[in-house]
Image (cartoon, rainbow, N blue to C red; front, side):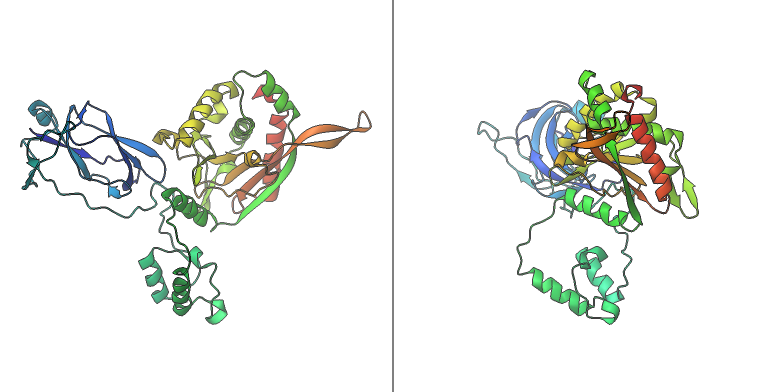
Length: 405
């Protein structure tokens, strides 16, 4: 029977490869068109590879835990001649195959002899799909020999932070570096996940900018009272996200990006929010936050939280955001200094709420209120402390009257 290849698809912009995490079928299984047969993982999400047409699984050429490039043939599907022609095949089997092999079917019967296709070459996973090239060099001086050695090992200048240099002005020499590598051999080493590598790379590039953080105390009583009566109920981070969207729609300059001697203003107020996943963080994006009422944002927000935790975010729900909101209060933290993503200028953080005394001038007495810290980390090249303070003040003002969100 004609064999149609199952091909690793293009899984997102500038995604070059993916890792096989699960093979859901066996040789000889009958499958339908568009059936999920292989699960693959990129540094952004877990996605499924589907069958191009109905048929029987002829062979699987890949192994779980290995990474393969986009366009690689993952296996072959035995299909009808009509389906083969519809998919542009004019030969009954892959041309590159010559040796015949046999495979046992699900009930032990011997299937028809089929060509033994060449297995695709596994590749080393790399960090892809990020706003800035992952191979951007660090700022520290390194000799050409050192650079060549680090490039050979896939390391960055940030990886040398823990090495005490013996060269001039504390510079790390090649001898220091080789000694460091020798010491690593005596330690327990585990591979970092693609998610952890992606987060580390993004933070390394973000740290090349001067990042500052400002914060103010925020009384949450109005938000908490509104949330009790709301249906559906927004989370605290969504209140802050909507308030940030409105504030930026009034003045988008704080969300601009400095490019040379010009500031590029955002074309839309699309804001991401941090979702903790296994071994990292994903940032789903809500679009046109300034033009979407809070109640309409809730179902989409809840949907993206769940998809993010499953690492199944659609490409339309990632990237292109002007800022991020993170609720670090869910971890019991009252204060933190989050770092903006490389393509963003701002990240708004919300700390854990605490019962605090606040002076009521009218009653001439202290009264208990629920208070949390609202922080803003920003690229200091674009924003100064005054602008950051005004933006925080406007967000707090909007949160004091949540019914208008």
